[in-house]
Length: 171
Length: 300
Image (cartoon, rainbow over all chains, first blue to last red; front, top):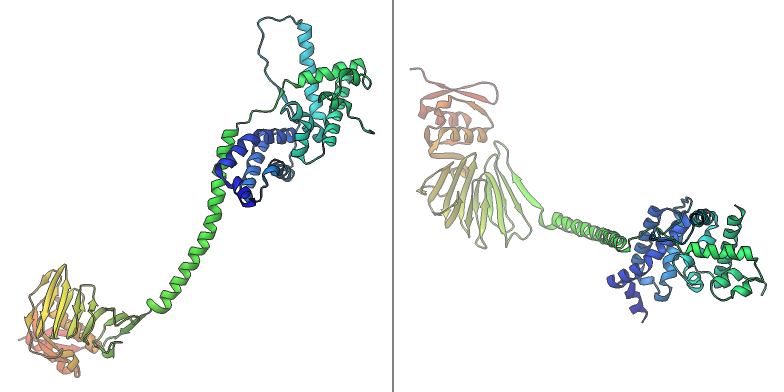
């Protein structure tokens, strides 16, 4: 049975589907850490190549967290942080609007404040918060991927929100 | 519960808004709601996972191939080294017999065939598997007494001679090629032609000119008996042979180079030999220094 499992990740098809299922999340995770798309791209590729080389050692239900651990370690090796700036989606312009220009301006200002506050978050808080908000990951999933407890995820998200609110309310 | 991460709980719908109000003020709640609302519009940079997969697959192949190649390179290198050594020690080991000017020798091949090597000649062959693969290379002139057995081949730059068992002489000097058969039958391969040379005949060729085998009277090559015998041979060839046998340098008028010469000279007396090659052409000779002789025309 274990042999069958070993072969799974060494199989081209299995590897490809594993890649397509997880590469975007991994990319985002590295980006939340460093804010550098090129570096994130490189680390994603390297991490998956490591998975391929060690395909026989990959345990299927631990594969994702293994992947994230590899990427985290690779990131430590290439420690090069810049400010993490998360952009907003371009919301389609509405033909009509019942919102006042003041409200729209206020909204823009708020978004800018939030963006800045996010980049000022500590790395663990930012990762937990954004994986939940952008990638829609449940606390349990985040805990699994990062190899931490659900409680820790809750703590990080809670503190992230508290810190964001404080920074926004001060200005 | 000591630690209560109420905001996280509320965000995860584990806590109602009313319950949250126990912990946070109205204003704070409004900001949290705004943060949650605004964060819905956040997005990570674009990531093209299929493009990335292609890149990874390319790199994957590269690393894979590289890995394989290294093993392969070592294996191939080791194999080549072993084969090369084997060849060196067993198979490709060539035996060379060579003579210098004024020097003759004879030796026995592994199959007891005997080779007499005239002056300034060389024979190369592989002792390994000699009995099944009787091939040798000749430069110069040699007389072979071949024991019966497998095909015996003498390769020269001008042509090759094949026999099964016989006695024959081969000369390869410059463009001149002559095969004389004393017993049995030899097959000569010369410029895409195969010529049968029966016992008591000789085949000679120079450049593109070859003749049908002609009859000879000898039962042994003359040089074996310490003289050189020529029948309608270009004079330059006679002079060259004389130079080889006596290790001398001869100067003569080049107009005689292609004059055909018939006659003998001995290998044991230079004076006699020089007379033998000069008198028929009405020449005299003069010794200049130790190893130099000049042929002069008679003035009469």
